[in-house]
Length: 304
Image (cartoon, rainbow, N blue to C red):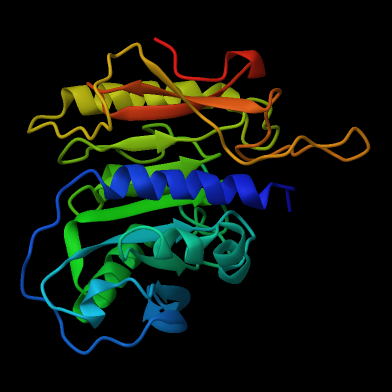
């Protein structure tokens, strides 16, 4: 398994949760009553001819414990190829993300034999053409039957193979998914599966410039294609911004990632496979696409 920084992956998903979960307003409505208490739960469902496991985390801040009618975001965290849901739960900082983000509920589902049918990646799920989009839909239905989920704030993010899968969900489950945050996984070519979202899809794409497993060279094509898809999609545009931004404005974000000592092997896969320690987010408000690139440490800070 490729070596990656737990702290940076956790920071990436925290950033995804904060930026996407704030994108749309919460609406009061009737919600399910008597949910289970806060904590981590592991469960199994039967789907697509086999058993599929998942971890559900319900934060102590879930408002349904104290009142009715306050929907919360649902966040799917998708593991990388060959990774387990348990290590993903720990490495991605799922508990921290949910506890600190307004009652957000998280689900860490398991792909078929630790793989997702993300299009270009990865077998055996791709070879067997597993219906992983349908699996995520079913999990969303199950969670929403017990908890007060805001249907307008269901998000998916994932690492590596999970990044590929989150792109696919943005393409083929846009009626369910409100935004995606792929980490070290690119959007598959049209030949792998059609990308026809029914609405604009907010995308936060993280990719290390020195990633030697899922190389960076295809990452720019991914966000450019999403920009094209979102621009061509009919319907209202909803863009969340903490402050006014021009299309050329760059926001630079400090992510916790201590430099590796020369005696240690630097990461070769993931968002921290960078030639520099600082990273930046380039924001295109019109296309609703953000992407991560490296930048020299001397230029840290917001620039115009």
